[in-house]
Every structure is written in structure tokens, then in C-alpha cells.
Amino acid sequence: MYNPKYITDIMKISGLSSAEKEELAKVQEKFAFRSNEYYLSLINWDDPADPIRKIVIPDSAELEEWGRLDASEEAKYVVEPGMEHKYEQTALVLVSDMCAGFCRYCFRKRLFMDEGIREIARDIDADLAYISSHPEITNVLLSGGDPLFLSTKQLKKIVSRISNIKHIKIIRIGTKVPAYNPFRIINDPHLPEMIRKTGRKDKEIYIITQFDHPRELTEPAIKAVNILQEAGAVFANQTPLLNGINNDPDSIAELFRKLSFAGIAPYYVFQCRPTLGNRHFVVPVEEAYFILEQAKMGCSGLAKRFTFVMSHVSGKIAIVGIDDERTYMKYHQAAEWKDIGKFMSFKRDPEALWFDDYVDLLSEKRIFQEDKPPIPSS
Ligand code: SF4
Image 1 (cartoon, rainbow, N blue to C red):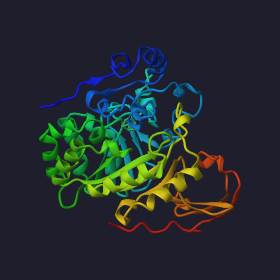
Image 2: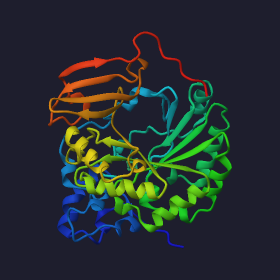
Image 3: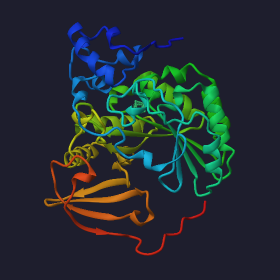
Image 4: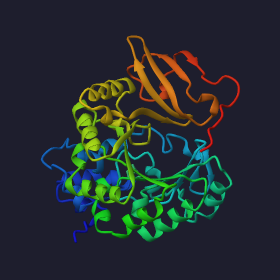
């Protein structure tokens, strides 16, 4: 049974030269490094611009003082320890502060830093009490860190307690384990068993993967996905658009085609958030839009089901169109009901990297002017 060894010190990576190790040691001191033998074996070490390398190997560009640790101001929506309630129907619970690899572009890298911002739910009693007393919550998203880095026993306890709450219909598990270490799934028969038992008629388990590049969809990765699909999990994928990793239409189109062939629905593409150390990953908003539109030309309808959004403190803002003069955006999800569906038109700004960079609002239209729209009961 192959069980890849975890590596947490770049000094132990044979693909890097001594000079590179010395240079990157400074980065590792600030932002933790973590990977494993399997994922490192996907890197083409002859190519310094290899996209898989860029996902997981530190880069001295991370030391540029740019961005914030909590770029989406998640702290604003914390209602209980380790739990956020930003969108009416969804509760987000951070159940783990560890991953099978640390993505260099991670927007929650603060969880892995030495000075350690302790944000995760060590004990979910208070979270469950909150969810139970809020019948409008129908979805619980487990995230972190990576929930699949927990043992199946730990995860099962959490999932079964949540699934016992009557109004919870969907439990989502956000994970990059199928990409980073598919053997965590392949070697553990208890995980599909847990999904089989929990994913009952009225409770769906969604696995939200994070495949960023088509080369991550290896044979073991697909096998791991298939095991959980056969157990009844529904799959969707989200990825940020990242400079040097997937910012070309061919890579994105290939990624989404392969995801659709594997029964994984492309769900969100995120504009890279202005997170500390991430400047070199960010593609300007309008350039990102055109890359994605071009990629769509190589995709079937099923492969282009994604929405391109900025996960802003005020909500998920979709970039829906661009013409010669204007960029059009619409709230896809909103923290405040008055913003739901709000449509906005801005003067184009090819340099803009984030929603806040668009200062020249030309018009906005609120869909719901007065009363809160009724939430359909499920
Ligand atoms: S798997 Fe998710 S939480 Fe973990 S480092 Fe990557 S982006 Fe961050």
C-alpha cells in the first residue's frame, strides 16, 4: 500500500539546488512549506516555470509586502469559534488547520503561520447549537485547512452530528486531498463507508475539490474521486485563476474538460484574492475574464458551468461582461440581502486586481428595492 511521506522542510527536496534551498529558506520561515513525495513527483524539475512547482514550492516573490492576511475579512462573519455565517443558507466551519500540501497562494495561509491565528473549531458543540437554532441554514461547508486531513473517525463524528440536524440538507467538504494525496482516500475504506451512511436520501454530501491544473488529474486522483462518487458523493471543483499556474486558455480548457469527463462540475473560478505574499499570482481582473472566455470556446456546456467571482467581504461578485468601455459585475452571493443580484457597471480599468480597485461606478441597479425577498422553504 503506497503511502507518500510528508515533507515539511525544503532542505529535504532533492529537486532543488543548494542555492535555491538557501534562498527559499527565508520564505519558509515566514510562510510554512508542506508537501509529500507523491505531489512532488508530479513536478518537472527541469522547468523552473513548471505550474505544479509553482503551486507548492515557495518563491522569493512571496516576500513582497503586498496584500492582507485576511483578504476577504472573514473575521467579520465569525459567529462562534471556528464558524462563519455570511450567506443566509450556508454555515462555514473550519475543522482543520492542516492540509496535505500548503498551496503557496492560499488565502487562509494565516492558519499555518508560526504566530498561529487560532481560528479553527476544536470543539463544535457551540457551532452545532448555533446551526440548530438557525433553520435558514440548509448547507454546512466544512473547510480549513483540509477536512480530509482529519482522521475518518474524527470527520465521521462531525459529519454525523451535523447530519442529525433536520434542516441541514447538504454537507460540503472542501478539499485538495484528491490532488495532493489521493492515497489518503484510496487506502481508507472507512471514508467511502462514512459517505455511504451519511449521504442519505435527504442529506447530500458534496465534495468540493480544488484541482488547479490538468496535470493534477492523474490516474490515482481520478481513482480517489471515483471511490467517493461510487459511495454517493457529488463532486464540484473550484480553483483560483493564478499567474504562472493556469492563466492560459488552453490549460483552463483542458482542466475543465477533464473535470467534466470525471463527473466533477466546474463550480467557481476565483479571482486571486489580495492576500499577503500573493502579488505574483494575481492576474488583472479584465485579463482573467478574457482568458476564461477564451477557454470556454474549448469546452462543452458541461465543462463551462463555472462562475468567475471575486470573493469579496460583501459577497461573491461575478464579472459578467466587458465591452470597450465598461466592466459589468453582479452579486452572485451577497452578505446583505439588499445586494442580492445587484448589477453594477464600472469604467474599465485594465490594471484593477480586485473589486475595491474599481472606483468609477457608472451605474448600479438593485433588484430588490424594498422588502427582503421571500426565501423559498425547502
Ligand atoms: S488546500 Fe486549501 S486551505 Fe490548504 S493550503 Fe491549499 S488553499 Fe489553503
